[in-house]
Amino acid sequence: MKTIARIACVPGMTVAEDIVDKNGKMIVSSGSQLTEAHLAKMARHDIMAVTVHEKIDYATTHYEKIRFSESFEAFEKIYQKNLAIYKTLLLDFVNYHATFNIDHLMDVFDDIYKAAETPELLLDYLYNMIPSEDDLTHSHCLNSALIAGVFGEWLGLSNSDRINYIQTGFVYDIGKLRIPDSILWKPGKLDDSEMALLRRHTTMGYDLVKNLALNVHIPLATLQHHERNDGSGYPDGLMADRIDPYAKLIAIVDTYEAMTSARIYRQSLHPFQVIAHYEETNGFVRYDRDALTTVLSHIAHTQIGRNVRLSDGRNAEVLSINENALSHPNVRLTDNGAEMDLSKFGLSIAAIF
Image (cartoon, rainbow, N blue to C red; front, side, top):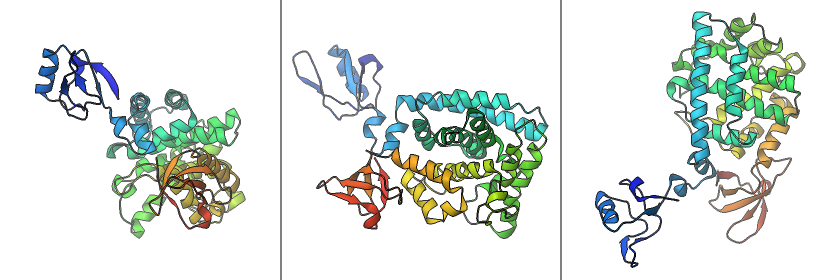
């Protein structure tokens, strides 16, 4: 809640504290929604200031609290400004063969990245971004570059390697700009012909960037970011040591971004659900084990101290992380203080507060 001048009040605001006159007589009770009649009455009694509720006062989950914060509002403005710049740069390059300047993209990265106080908070901000249908592909790529910046820090990459990782994030999915949105963002299952066209985005992207003045790993990562260590990927079914190392790293960013971004047909997954997805889909075999373990462990540890709702409806606090079962931490139950290792009880985390 916040205290504002009476003249700044407008109908619809919710009063957070009783408004009384100089004699202590009630004018408007706490919890009331202000009306024009209330405003006139307050003016007659020379009320100078009023305490009202803010959106954040009604937030129940951790991510709602982030979304309703003033800092997120400021971040969102910077993000949207730079998303428009990024979108124009890419479309001009892809559609009109404009000169591709990677330094301009790094300016976009720097402007957004410094708008968040910490890398962890940046991920929380991105989790709350809701792209328009027209911006889904561009926001996916922009977010991937930002996430690569975060993961690059966690992985302890050198400054030059981290920059290459970020630049990979900006362009690795550029081939999707050649694929119709009706296929890219189709809610249901793609048929065989649609899937074949979608998979061509890797080779289309490679053709777009292979002759640019980029680090040699970046075009290869663009081509290979859907290859998997076990040979189950595409376009060539490559196995572990034949896949470019940046392709392996950006594959983690790609799947993480997809799971944590809202889509028309599903909600974003929260951190423990993301971790569980990798655990349950053989992720530590399909992706680079060391890099994935480092990233997921870091994500899990950022949740320590958070209040959560368990799959059986009970509330708890995350106490510590099980390194061998990252999605199932040790928690303390809110109702009785009992401590539980979720990995031993078949329970999962349904929501984070």
